[in-house]
Image 1: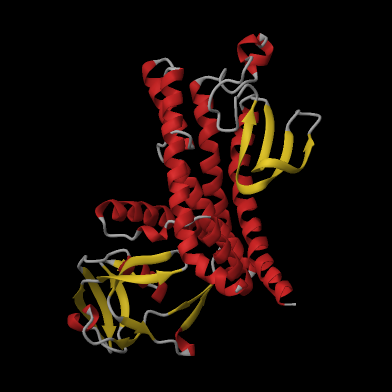
Image 2: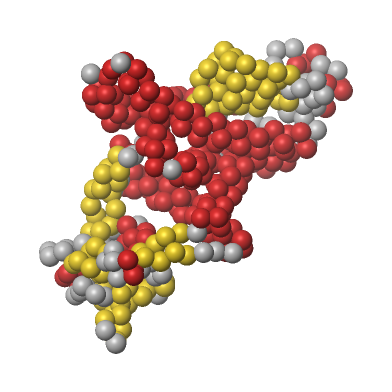
Length: 383
């Protein structure tokens, strides 16, 4: 009975994880697939996951083999004439193709078409995130807290600046503040930066200078260094606001949410380089599975929202100029466009080897982080 309970708990994490990863990978690869087909390139295989097949079928009209594989940590679209799913070179025997066969290969296309096909994957990831966020805003609206201060902790920067219980935050650095979450985002992303708060205190407006202090905050992804000023909201029923949005407003907010994720990711990478961020936030499949399971227990709409966040993150990371990733291919095509000829196969192969090393090192680091974070919980669960 205890084993069945543990197995059921495991399934409770595995199924949401597979749901999220499948959606994210499918739409990313679908971007490559659709633009590739639009450009006249034949697609030999569309795979969700790596390794041996679980199941597959072949589209007789297009000749594409659609497959699900056992390792659901990614996927690929293999275009005709490619040596592998990463477009890492010509397949063996490609030089013996007829002219008609060459015309439907990826490498036979002009550089702008190849760049469009590669860019389509990250673009699809961003679009998926935008539509998920926009759909959430449109169909569910948003319950938010009014920016009313309830508690000001002694010794923190808010108290030093003169914020008081009952203050209503109107704007920060000239940006209107409509709810508590909006205020948090501004403060958390502005550690050690002086901010100008305008608050309503009774019948008058008061201007205060507040500098958020950098603090380590525990999150499901690890410790996150954010700005904090030491205040807590008033959660009285009358301070809860349900916001509803039109379709256009929802789409605009979906784009804004996507941009916020990209902006914070860039800031995090910059913080890592500057030593202001903790590397334990770099997560792999184990921690994503843990978070997916936890979110699924609360609501499946939250799980879909998580898929949007991961999709945007995958789209951004794939645009980094690292060989093997989409951004690395785009970097090579940019050089080709400027020089008028492709980078030599030797240099491309060297680049892909370096890229593979960087990606594998990142995956290893993320896995170690996962084991350190999730390992004790798994031992407790199965112990």
